[in-house]
Amino acid sequence: MEGNSRKIILVGTAHVSEKSIEDVVRVIEEEKPDAVAVELDLRRLKALKGEREEINLVEVIRKGNVSLLLFQLILSSFQKRIGKEKGIVPGKEMVSAIDKAKEIGADVLLIDRDIAITMRRLWTKLSFFEKIKLFYYTLRGFFEDEEIEVDELLKKDVLDVIIEEFRKISPKTAEILVDERDAFMAFNLLKALERYNKIVAVVGAGHKEGIEKFMKNPESIPDVKGLLETKKGRISLFKVFGLVVTLAVLFLLFSILVYSGTERFISAFTFWFLANGILAALFAGIAGGHPLSILSAFFIAWLTSLSPFLAAGWFSGIVEFFVRKPTQKDVEEMLNAESFKEVYRNRAFRVLLVAAMTNIGSMIGTFYGIWYLSTHYGIDIKEAIWAGIKSILRF
View (cartoon, one colour):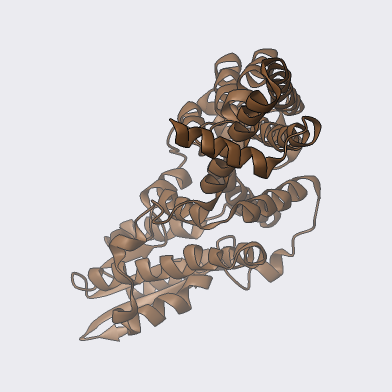
């Protein structure tokens, strides 16, 4: 793309192609640009150089980002699996571009959006059921030894293949992973063109067309500040649903106390405690949790199931962390694992798995408890809710 004697040469690559590496080096040698732009952010560049940031698993659990971390693991594993098939490290063409830029004295520009922001934005866009589908496909991928058609993949950007799979789960995926990043990179390239006469930009083949489109029509580029926001502007339907469940359970227990007396209430509460505790502990055990993690799941599940802002997995996961004491090396090995058997034995993954499975067990216990209490204690739910409202209004 050219304009006013200034020029941008876009080079589309497949992230696991030896030919792409050769093309990138050749174009930079021929064009001798003032700057070389690459489809990387600082985090990914450090990762390619083996300088990963430390991951604090306790913070991941405390902030409820277990699923997000596992999601990033999926994307990373997919590219590594393809790279292993072809014997090429994913992203090597980007490193080659940077090395060649330094060799000819050109500046290096990192034009992509921070990967953490991209993943958070994507995760908040996925609905609860879309996330369930995602993990289903993930587990299936771990257990199936499916042959990857590498030659077919090399005809396009690896990200395109990932998106084709995720598009089946959520149409919003392409918008976040491709369209937004195309706009972000186009904006950065146009800004860079104000400082440099010639730029060679190395991007995934799946981004080339989108970037060119935005650069030809700069007015179509969305507000960049908006592309960097990670907080949701709307109320989470899942949290609203959790609040409704909490209120339903409290009304149910309250109505049992009012209509059936203290003895029946104690019986109902005991069942609630055991239904949540046993199932949360059972699932923590299935995840391979330490006995102390299983016990913490058992004793805390009844309480966390009554709050949409707490999760039993937070507690069992943190206990698992302090018992297992995973190191940064464990985290690295987890990110590099290529089979379910390998990743399951990893102490860092075990912490995340215990947290996630405990939450699933507690959730099942919650719904089973609601069904059992409403059908075995002779309470009409509509009447109970109305009675609870009237009792509250008396105060």
